[in-house]
Image (tube, rainbow, N blue to C red; front, side, top):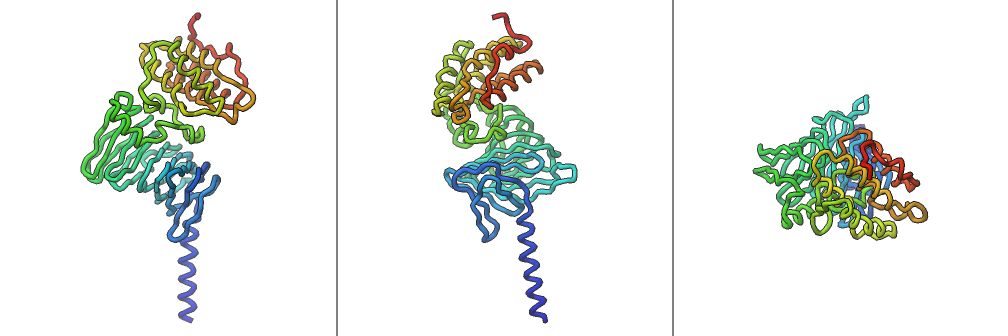
Length: 350
């Protein structure tokens, strides 16, 4: 009888552990190449649509990529050669997260908060922690340090000790080691050596195309890690001289220069004095002329909507912003747009 009771007790423990592991915390909306989820000795290959559970470790190879969305709309990208443990996930009745704790063990990641209280997010790494205040950022876990690149919002990057640095500027990079944490400054002001180092740490700040639209961040081109050199065009003509061949290539399926047009738009708009709404309207009108609807449009995606999103970010006019974003969405869906309809409210006479 005792043996039977012992058997039942052991069975309950095993089944209970499986039940905990099977409780869905997030869904892998997209998976590239080799990625797997590990729970103890249980290893399964991840595919698009697979649920991920508390206690599972997501592991990718050199070409792996997993894009995860949680129930509260928090988004997490696990890049190549990466390893991350989903430690805890508690969802409240109102759909907000009561707690989301992840342990990023190695590799490169993107994190975008959902609709929950920001104090309820927790990210640990072997060399530090990240405190979140409603934000989007990339971070990398390297041998002796953790790095992050802010896109919007505010976060606190801490070393394993008590040293912390607050990150709250768009494109601000930071670094934490066991005993210290420091800001590395704004990425678009970095010299070539530092910029190259940042490119190594933040893969998707250099090339967002592998990511689904929902996992892309509009501020990425502003950070100017794209391409072999920083872009600083001084006129719309100079922007279009770069964008025209790049977008044409992309409609043919060539993406070697993905992000160059968006970076050119960001560089030009950053150089302007306020107000800039007229220039934004004129630039938007010319960018839309590069749209090539028809055969191959959906197959050969272009960065044109992202370039328009950068223009919208720089606008101070809410009506203009909304109009440009709508245009970008129309182009992304490969639907014909009317050029006359894209002139936002403060377009110039030219």
